[in-house]
Length: 88
Image 1 (cartoon, rainbow, N blue to C red):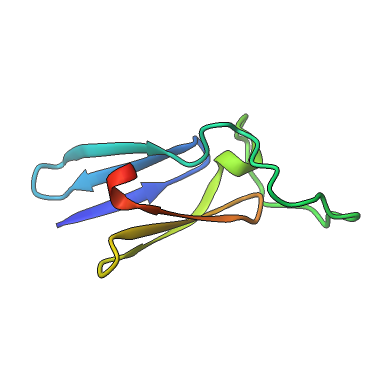
Image 2 (image 1 turned 90 degrees about the vertical axis):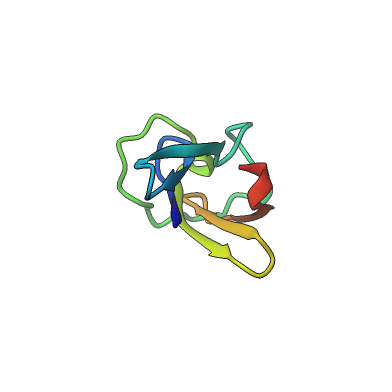
């Protein structure tokens, strides 16, 4: 049994419950600025955070698909990246 966590510190951690330790690591966004979408004309605020990382490096949600072995990561920038769990 394992679970994956994400946060504002640009890290993804794979935890093994039986071993009670981290067995895998990854990053939310390596470059720090995804810039995949144009900036909106008006921004109504954002998530409250004290992180020094760029918004694309601050994860807000994570979902794992057991059939495809894929991970979907939503960021504070509003983007979602989908990657193989082997990339972690």
